Image (spheres, rainbow, N blue to C red):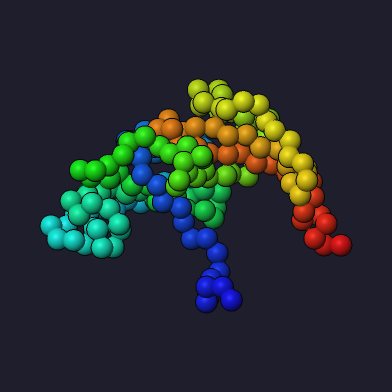
Amino acid sequence: MGLPGLQRLDHVGFTVPDLDEAQAFLVDVLGCEYLYSLGPFRDDGDWMAEHLNVHPRATVAENRFFRLGGQAIFEVFAYTAPDQHTTPPRNSDVGGHHVALYVDDLDAAVAHLRSHGVSVLGDPTASRGPHEGQRWIYFLSPWGMQFELVSYPHGRAFFRNEST
């Protein structure tokens, strides 16, 4: 039995070193829609530690919300904290992660990223096995966060076989 009432992913939150740089990347390169901002947030007690698992003196100068593709929401934070780490984790690090974005035309999307000076990692890879029919590639945001583009316009083997 899973989480009662679970319906869908609501949003993905991440912290960036520069909100204006992040907004330019998210809006001008990825095509997100800026929605609104909140903040600042700080507390002289233990609220930040108790509720957000960060240093009690951590502050959020501002957080901004963006809509991607009409459904996904990114909540982007500008934190400061006495014990803050500023190096983004790699996929191989504990807590490592990436955000995967679906595109209809992987080659056109990669060309778009490269035309904007985005660091694209390698060339597109064709998947095998349950993901046969999918191609993917990783790229980095200006602050080093890992993103992935995926495309499977004719479906993936797993989902094609699931209906038989």
